[in-house]
Image: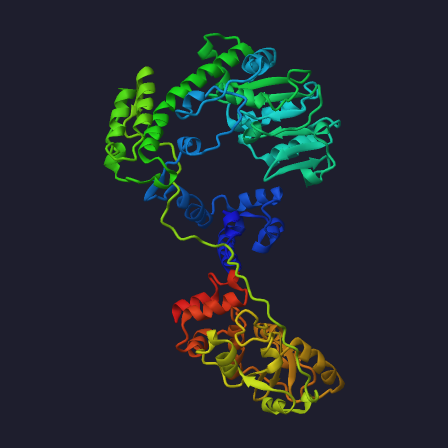
Length: 633
């Protein structure tokens, strides 16, 4: 839930987190509460802080509702109008170049018709299956006397850290680490492995290493060699991953329920020199061990029983997915090309549940499936249909299935709008505008903002927006806000939407405000320092806002004004207008509703939101004062 919250806009993050915290802060001691009482202090990579957050928020109803609304329900309840059923038939039989390699061929019965595994060209290659079975037969087997994911997780780590075992790698084919997190596992191993190991090598968004001091590094930049560390192959890395372990390395390989032979052999293949001096210890928890004993009708387990169990599982797997193979083949023969693989999804309950499970001949399923297509259509591949029918007839058996069983396919077409987390636009390169010097910088002697026009060009904010920034032209800007030409012209082009200067420095007079550029502020600053008394104030918008929030008098922020200006209703309007122009989404004036309604007039709401985007403040918009005001007005 917190990870999802951190993806929200900044204002939304703060408001939602404060709601959570107000409901749960009484559950945490004061000393601990100071560590998590603000969203800016949250670091989800900090395990200790994460445990503290769990203590504080585990019964927080608002957090749970947020988690359900934004994490669970969007994935678990979404529906699709269509489905794509492009399968191995499409990828295999529509390509002119069919190349590939597999060290195992146990599931070749599920290959599309016409896609065959080429027999090895040498006798040694032909003997690969037998050689691997022979090598695996001679490996060690152990049963971990535990059940349950969390117990198995802890027991497995203790087994690995036992110095008598001297394991160099964990090949987690059985996903026994799923009882905990990878972070917990590597931290435990680093602290408890024998000192001969320099660290742990593991996969977490890329291959990483962690040394004995707990320092994590990308593997490519790490000084820890694979042969000198402990390697963790998680379940997804049990195929294809390659690490250079010591020639006599010993690994522990885990088993899972219904494991097939090709998965076992691929996992064992991570030990590249298993035909030499590298060895394996194969382990399973009690539930998997009971499954192996039941299948083999024995109470004693060796690697022979394990291999026999995986062979039986492979046969069951092939039988189970024969129905999918047949349906996908029929669909491919009826459509022929990937572009026609979109089918309308039927979400009616009677269509999904009208057929019950029961024993039925595979040929009957074929006959029912073929009725879904127009077999008289000229694009139908009758030759392929006949070949599928021939295979179905030759292996026709009774299967316990539902006639309404769906294709095992990805449903990828959903009627939804793409949400861009970050909108990136290419802004044209233009020439920067060269600022012009004032005639002089004796502005400290002026009491009126209009007198500055004697020194440099100034424009009313309304006029400036009309000419250079039409997005906000229809806002009812106060007539007492002016800007110098140097402030307005950041680049040499007419439209300045992508090149606006933020409001930082300004001169406050008794009859108005003048926005100036940072360079102009630098030129004016010496004049204010030389004179202890001035008719105007040189300040910043940030200081003005802080003074308003803290209730300070404005003379605390000025440089030697004769008559300090007090906060007035008129100046509240000017301050709010400057914040609106600057793209701020929160306002410091209390009676902002009335001021805001007068300011925006008939300016469209989307224009004001566009101004926020142009200013780069989009992340602060959601749940902000500005969003609330736009909805209200």
